Image (cartoon, rainbow, N blue to C red):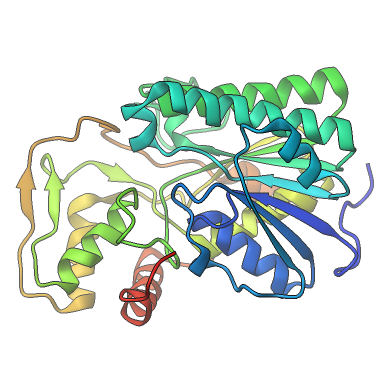
Length: 325
């Protein structure tokens, strides 16, 4: 297959979940690059204020990926579909049936619609959660999976549907496994936001960040701009067809280190509060190997954890009190 990328302005790109944290950043980048973008979002956790609306090349459709007819109508005429819509790990744990309907059923709907309408590629946003507690670090794409939550199960099921449609129907798919994404538009007033935004919110209020367990658990925190770049490379690079890529930094950060850095950045004169372990996502260590995406797509993360946290703080200072949808 030749280079998928056409001249900007002639492409119509669909981003499901495009009003959410990751999806809205992808949408804004595509608009900046001159593409026409259609966002499909049910606004369960997405926020209209994340999007530059009104915009002459942006169309926003409110609806769910569980509605196949709607999904098909939205995708019709699209060159590429970037599938970010999903219930997150907290919602999925509380309501596994909803997780199944949205994360698995919704993904199947998107794949069926892409097959029917002829979009050139579908990029599927998966998660490093599929690895569970790994035996070896850093984690390679072909290492054993160990799903420890309904969310991880549904994400891996979506990956396997992508693989099946690629093998059975020659449908061009690419999978990106995100590792703990943080940054601009991860709103702390959203109850489902990640730990970075929660720690910043506490520190900016002069309250102690709450650390579950001893704080020595590690994660591979990845800044949103790097995630957007990796996702778009997976969308347009010929080599990405049929592939699965880790998207991270290859660097472990303990939760204690994260909290200390955030307290230093904000200048908050508080100390972390240690509480019981969480009921979900009790992974002790996580760091992914990014050699495959580095080698095949020439993607490398450009933002360090310190730089990304400072950029996040600047955005939160400017946007924390904005009225949400």
